[in-house]
Image (cartoon, rainbow, N blue to C red):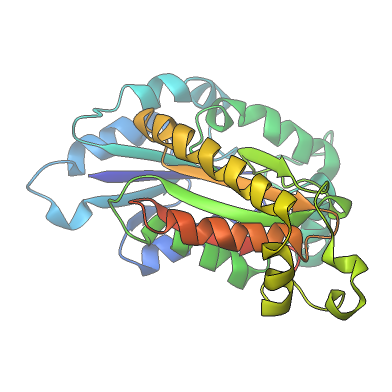
Length: 285
């Protein structure tokens, strides 16, 4: 049986994530009391219920706070021989969550006469800390549309099911901020920048002209080789440690040329492995 726990702060996209999993065949339960997780899995993780071998549940701050504190104990006590367990945590920055609640005019589940919206948003992260500490995959939805979030969840959870580690190469621009959901970050701003070549400035790392230029730069090829060798050595260690997902962020100044080129080149390299390899270009998608 495969179990995915969906969690996150209110307004981060948990319902969208759960709907995606339901559409691809998961049996989904929203707002499950954490104390009932063991009972649910015991009742369906046997040969008598083959239709419930892929289950997704949403557990969030609407739970009893005492149950959230006990969540690590509850989760770790699930039978790992019968149940493949994963936790996906969705989040967004405070300002984005404030904006989403203002636009939808929905009530935050923790607000009250004595607790305003911003305070509720901050308190929610504290309450969910026991789940955050165990999460296999964190998705920052601050800059994602609903369609982009659906695609990310579908691709990362379902592509090449059963092949092991899901590796995502993500390009970004440092001037827009470092992705908070990255497991590793490589800074390639020291490399020759196609932006300063007039005929390449309006292009990006997906264009052949830019790729040809960067192919000819020795420093770029040295950086690529070093990152490739590092990942070749250490990704198997992460996989052996039961990691399901890993996000490798590569950043240049604007996220248009060097980082995009290197992500594409690494994707081609690691596509030849057993990993589920994906690429996302944060600034040009």
